Image (cartoon, rainbow over all chains, first blue to last red; front, side, top):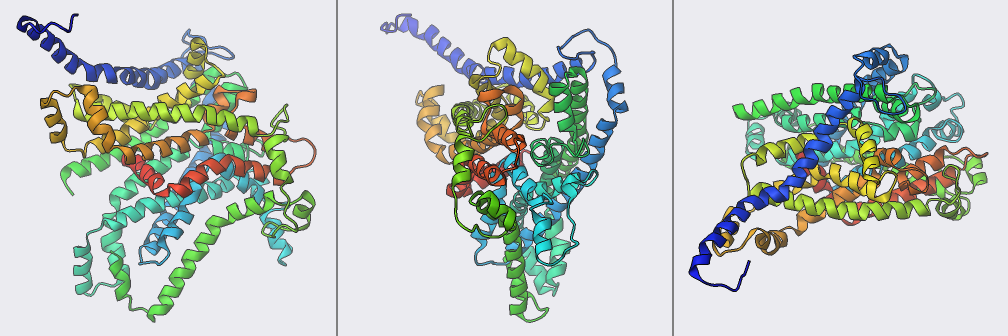
Length: 308
Length: 293
């Protein structure tokens, strides 16, 4: 196209081309992301779903074989251990993070002098990799030279704290390390929520003679409901996909007593050449996320629409 | 909000404050303890570790463990320390952060200023992508990387991190650009500015803060990632988190806790550094990521 021509006759089609380009460009720019999103997220979910219905082992095969992998999965003792551990870990991890996070936020919201520094201290573990956290806590919790040894040296000779090497207890050490890393984040969420509470209502309650405790339990904490929801969603999401922390802290051990679904999936899909079984466990993980998060999001957005 | 403290009537005012500060300090000590233990342990000799206890200060400060963790510690079959893996991490984290932030900025721009039919649906679909447990895409991705010929390579890791970071970066920029008054771009459009001109001349100059948020978020996420690293790379191409885990789990004779701790600090330093210099933006990223809920 010759751009030098300024003849009025050429102006119109060129403009139309520009118009066309202008409406098309957003789609052209966003197009690749659309394809990526659809294919690499949803396409891959379908792909994994398909694999979970095959008897793929070392190499993927695509002839459908029905529910064999799911049957094998739920007959596998190790999978049940992983699910039980997810229940223990998820429940305690979320509970501890919510309670301690809220407590820290309330404590910090009392016109504390060094608030900035304290907040930074509570939050810094969030910047670390779960692998670093796991490595550090593994050293702290090791019975030989770690915390147990320290307390014994302080004079409590019979003190025992060897959960990390005790089957059935090692999953609780994952809770300890996980909560250490994530409570600061929950605190930051709650603190932001606390700062957003309407001063006028609190002033009114104070005038009416309500005690500080009463103000917290009946006004402030209920008004943090949306924050509870976001925290709950994020924490359950962290819990279900927890992988690195277990790998670094206990390696799923002793034995496979601290396995989680994520470590189970990794072990079977990539170390034991059981691709079909790994895919099936991944699908169950996805369904768990959907089953927990969708109702939470639904109830929260519905509340939003009804107008708070 | 903070006014409630003024009306505390139970007990003398100062006692309540003292308890409050004591509690805060106890928590602070608890959160700092692992970092303290890591640093002191990394500076001890093995004899020192065995003779002393967890919180004892080093008898004499020794950097031998740091040198070993960096240069000669075994991370599996090879014993070259973490230096190669550190550089690996740098070499895929930097491009992945830049690309995902740029594309995210573009997406956010399109999704707010150039909306078209279906763009909201697309955004919702992308958003839901933040929630999937990545286990569900590992097997197909391993295959796809093979087809593309970038399995077990730095470009492969860049690709994976860009693809699965886009949902977050798009979210950041979209939520930021929503607050930009649309009159600004409308005026520019009337003046004849096109799609790219508006982006470069108007939108991008407004964006430094959100770019920092996105870069910090992506940097922290990708540097700290373990799952993609352990699945999609092997041997000398592994990122630092995977190498650290291998180093700790490599059992060659005596367990050298001081080397483990030095290695852990080396792996954690870059993100800790970012946190210290740009904590404000780090927090903004975290809470912006939370908005997705």
